[in-house]
Amino acid sequence: EPYPKITLIFEAIERQADFFKVMFGPHGDVSYINRYKDLMETRIFKNLSYAQPQEANRLVPLEYLISYMASANLGVVLHWLQSGMKQTPLELSAIMTNLMNYGPITSSGLRGHTSN
Image 1: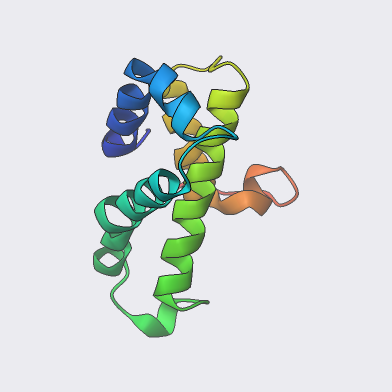
Image 2 (image 1 turned 135 degrees about the vertical axis):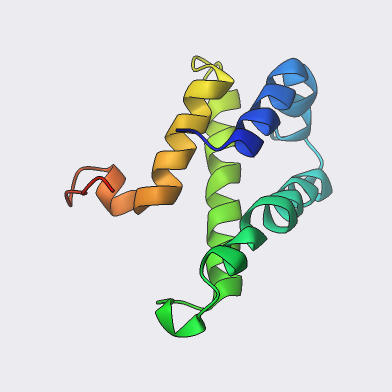
């Protein structure tokens, strides 16, 4: 099931697609891209510290994990905008949820996954 907060963000981007295409485009504002990434870090992914509070269970430091996930989310949004937004926000949210839940290796099919 897609994460509702991410779906809401993708819906907002879809409503303002022309604006985001300009801001995230080749002549856009880098500071705006950084603001989007910061939004993802502070509003979405910092919740990971509540979901997995024990540092010993992490394979990487939390701040690197948060940065990786926010940057990956930005990459997915950029691709969506640049490729014509063929997926709905809900479909894109499902893609991002799978990437977050299973990681790029499992999501690519290189390694199998088990359902919980």
